View 1 (tube, rainbow, N blue to C red):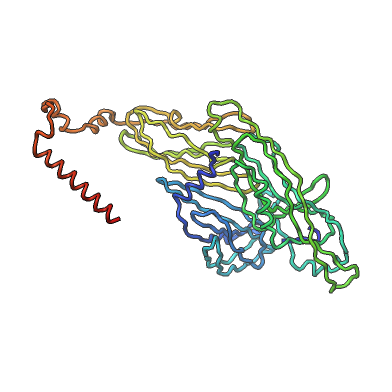
View 2: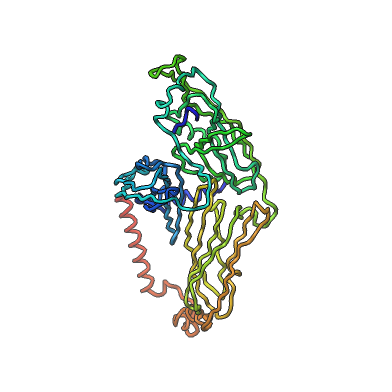
Length: 484
């Protein structure tokens, strides 16, 4: 701000949460440093990661003299191998240099979810700006903690109405069921604002309380990890504002009910300054509540399709690769079917490949990567199969691997299908499989065995043996019963 400039419905969420709770064990935390040789217009990064946990709390990233913190991003990588899930959650802090030269990052330690991670530090070398396509940095951060001391004349104002407002915004007014829409809680401050305000100490407690109000029920949420307000300059109706993004998520509605996002409120600190100009004048602290207006998002049903209740919604493409040949009957090979794009990556399900007389396809391993940045949720989901040919011949994997989804941009159903052809050599495995299922010479003797019915009680030895076994079982059961 001008004077503010401060710092019963099945859902994929339930499924994923259950998997993590039952298949993943809490793991280590670690720190990864980005490239230490950068241009003056490039960012140095520090990434904090933890295994098999979602990041709930973490300590402040270190300060680096000569570099300024300018925005964070978060990501989640999920891998499922042999039914065991591994989740890597990460948050990345960007640093931009103010000049060229060498800058020292000393060794440091951070806390994430109560666990400790350390780094030995590094020396960052900043050179000439790198020529690249210019784009606006939406997360520039230019708060100066000494600015109010450097501009004491601003303390003259007594009580000026703040030229600012709180808003909940969405990037779409209507979506299809399963289609994501981005939602932000932002505080907008006009460039011409003269009121003195500051963030309260409980800012993110307030945000967490209001977040629960705007989260639609029966929706999958992909939450962007914002720990400090992210600032960018915007123009609304011809007027310039500083937008401070306080919270951001993408919601994927899982039912066809329209979504009403209610009004929320945020209380900020506001100051009344003495009317007499004096460097030592003391501002009187007060508060002001800001309220947003409600938002409405229409949720449309998907067009008719036999699989409309199970298809994913988004913009996707297929990337596949296969183990190099030759391919022979009885010899397995690996095949990866990767879906990548923008949408609810966590909800993507690939039907099991059919088993027939030509191939055996085994349960796939699943690798998942989700990125939450640039106001969208994107990523990849890979299904790693092992297959074994049973018959020689020429085959197309498109007969086994297809995936149907709905593209909301074109408003059509589309299919991703494998384009790989296989030439399989070798002998037929059909007879081999029959022989491998031979039950042995026990059944070969059936034709010559005596099939006369006999009463077991007429044969004293088997009858006596059965009585002894029954008595032993009874005695053992009584022993454990009385012992308990």
